[in-house]
Image 1 (tube, rainbow, N blue to C red):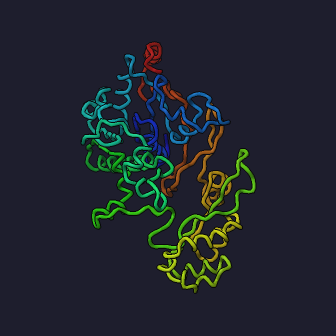
Image 2: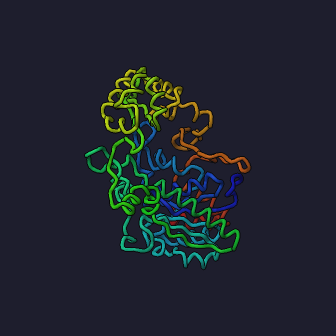
Image 3: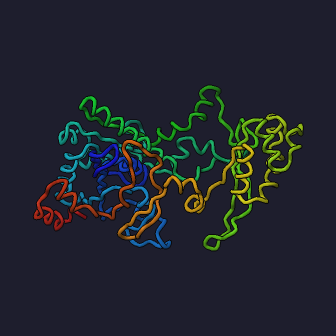
Length: 415
């Protein structure tokens, strides 16, 4: 497959769910031939998750979740409970550069596909395991789930309102974060192999990746012996800082009224003076309760009430525009309709892609958030249906004769 900086690199992708497929999605975006090994006997759980076109499940190939995170990949169906499947996997690895998985520690070894075995197949192979907790330590055999990793990494302890309990961050942040870390590690290993000819094994912990993006909480404790307090949408050093209610959307979506908000961040007293004028209350810039940061922090409840009394009369894009024009950091709290249909910047950059899929037709998906001048990239294809490329891979990549492919199919190894 031509195009992209990783053109010519092949990934034997044993990942599933979210963290692993998100890792290999980045590699597919960069031009790698990512071959996802799947089975209909135990399909990836994301093939059974919403959203579905029309709001109703329609088989293993209709999930918007799966189809988002597997764009540009190929699918090879292998049933490892049947003879012949393992040999096909080993043959594919012999023709691959990287092997990826995000199973718990030891699963690939039990399949007969641990790193030491893979080195016997291809001495310079690169392998990464994006397990929940890594290959060492007392948690290594635990299965990881994104919703559990949010509180485990410390994010929940920092999230919540004043006086309230820890809260979930809204989605399973640890998964895609681990995927990006994994893709970065693979690129580094490929670069090392280019320089030295050496492959290597990478033991990655999703949990540690999530902790790496939350240094303020850990540093507050290690340096000062204190725990950061939950402060909702506020900021320790800025005021006002938060989200403020605006008019509801004029139109309903599927019969529901949609709330709208504007996000505001005032970094200093000069920005506050501009904001006060923009909302029609210039006298607040000189009011002793609000003129200086310390005073605004001391009177933050009243300050936020004043701002919301203004924002509630505006629609969100209007409020954001008024503040932006005054030099105040503000933006619409974007809902999915806004992102998908209304934001002109995303349209101009061509972020969303619309590619035909053999089951669900042409659907909009998030695309590639970076552009490259020397090696142009694009989402090359919609996500594969389960096993869509099995025959293609066996015949063209592995060079198996038709009689052997037929024998494997008859044995159940290609399910």
